[in-house]
Image (cartoon, rainbow, N blue to C red):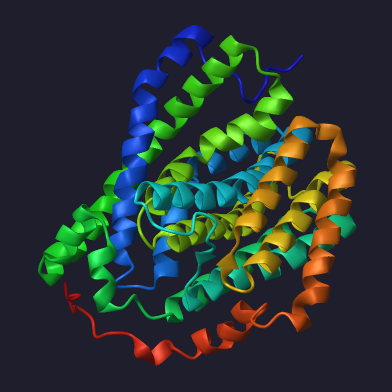
Length: 396
């Protein structure tokens, strides 16, 4: 029997012990890149800064998926890919609402069940989820993920970046809302400021890169010591561990006043990254492992992928009014928890997600502002000429 592609190297107990240094290292790297993104949003669009941040944050997830694709273990490949995406939307999005709600209560602010309000520019992330989701419907229909699909998905991600690049940076007046470290960097002269922002991204990215494999290995050791079944680990535990830098960053932002929307769009940007670039990587690595161009057959795993698509489409419908309500957060979490606790409920959950999605679509004409993101998106595209001149510093 072949060794598992996700088994700890060396003694599991010793690997688990390494969590004492890998866990803090991942935390530090997450905070450093978060500070870089917070400062960068004043000089490029917030969405572009979040896209770069998402790239750095999902390095561990790319590493896990690449290892499984290289071993050509299609059931585990599908389990990890779909599990990571469902974890982001079903646990990550609701977690952001809960963290901001608890933070509001701690600050003694009214409105514990208040919605997370998104900025108009966040329409780019909401609308940006639609093309890869629709294309994945075609992938499910034909039952394979091949190199041509990889090219299309990469092109969709490139188009998404082009849109983000056209959106102007954040307004000067919002500088007082950022954390102490990025605020200090924004006060620097132009060149030191640019070097400091680049240094944060570089330092955080390098630390995350160097720590990602030892961190994953230490968590694999913990799973082995605790006796967690492999499929459960690959579908739910491994994605949570590989997405841990992102959960850390978004929790940090969600606690801040007015930052919950930024945190939510950080998650949405990672959703787009994984529906496009991560999915495109799978047939590329699979083909390299075989030594010849080949498609990844997913016919036997259509329900798994379809369930993930329906959850993603529901997420788009929910955020299309640029608000994330308490009942929506709790509903997404409940549906995720059901499939986590009862894996055999996938077909039934497809019907539940589909019914909720249909209800959102049918009610849209009678709910003012329900498709506000799609109405705002064309205006964002026309904002190209509104960038500030290079080198201008934000005002405190």
